[in-house]
Image 1 (cartoon, rainbow, N blue to C red):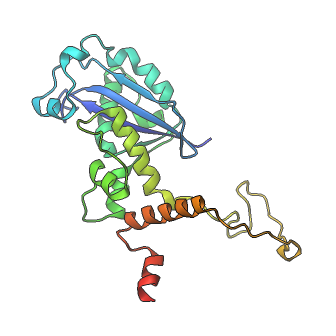
Image 2 (image 1 turned 120 degrees about the vertical axis):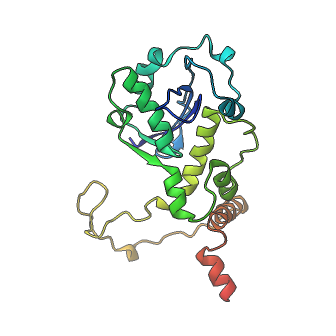
Image 3 (image 1 turned 180 degrees about the vertical axis):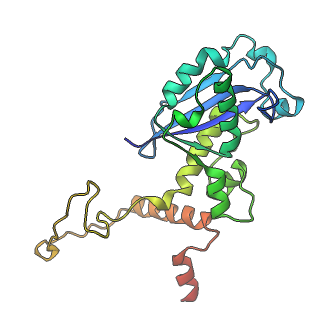
Length: 238
């Protein structure tokens, strides 16, 4: 099973090394690139006040967090949920740094030892769109992800938006071939050649709804590439 967790945190400030803490954790589960609804959302008592700048970003007050569990009380549940998954995080060094600090305070191993891997979508975006703004909001705009409900930063909402962004960023990574160069299938077993000339394959015309859905996908891909898709280039040349 390919299990991925899209993760985001909100914190009291910008520096875990200087004592800032996590106050919200939002996680969205993907299995085979599909949302499962098995999400994790926690508000956490950080045991300290938020910096004024951070409070303006997330709007989560100390009064609201006063009766919420401390990180030590939910650490095991968090690790059980994340264990063995690939984590998808935007600007991963920030969130991982805070989670590692929380785990260190509890005498637990760092996050990387509990999960299968960590993918940074900010690094992916910088490689795909060099020289452009690659914040979550900028990527939502570029990839056609609706972020109109994002008035303040919230860990679960941001994780849900990032899941859509990640799926769009990696849309072209799905394998279209069933055979590798050595002529083996996904299980490594040899595949036998099939003479397709012996089959009379029916041709099924697409419905108007299917054509419209196809055009919508092409438009999304074209928007993500800033109009540089091959079919647009050929159309312009013609």
